Image (cartoon, rainbow, N blue to C red; front, side):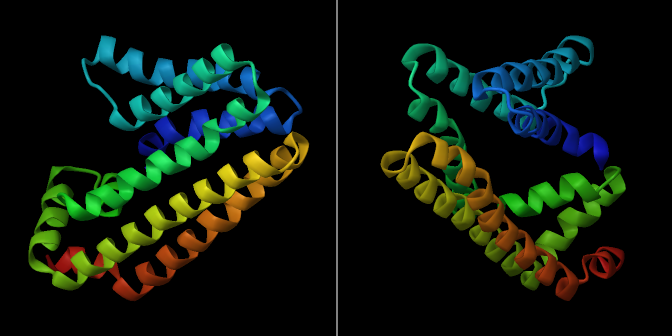
Length: 200
C-alpha cells in the first residue's frame, strides 16, 4: 500500500512541505518535479514499467514550472494548484461516464496485493450492483469536491491579494477534500468491503 501511494504522496507532500518552510512555489515545484521524474524514469528504464500516477503528477508539476518560467506572474504560478484540481476533478467525473469509476480503480490498486485479490475485486465489481453504485457516488463526490475547490481557488486568485491567496489556498483545499474523505470513510464502513471480497 505504501509503495502504491508513494508516486503521488511523495512529490505532493514535498511540494507542500517546502512551501510551508517558507520557500517559493518555484523552488518547491523544482524539487517536487525532480522526485516525480525519478519515480517515472527509474522504473521505466530499469523495469520497463510506466507508472501512470507518477506520470500524471510529473505532468502537472511540469505545467507549473512552465507557467512560472513563461509568465513571471505570481498569480499565474498560483493558478497551477486549481488547474491541477480542475484536471483531477474532470478526470474523476469523466470515469463515471466511461468505464469503471476511478475510485474503484484507486481503492483496488491500494487494497489488492496480488493477482488473486485483483480477480476477486473484478468479480465484486461484476456481480455486486450496490458496490458499483457506491463507488460511482464516491467518485462523483470526489470529482465534485476537486471541481468546487478549483472554482473557489480561481475566484480567490482573481479577486484577492496574492498574500491572502497563499494563506487561504491550502485550507480551502483541505476543507473541500476533507469533506469528500469523510464521506468515503462513512460509506466504506457501511459497505464492509472486506466481507464482500471474501464472499466474491
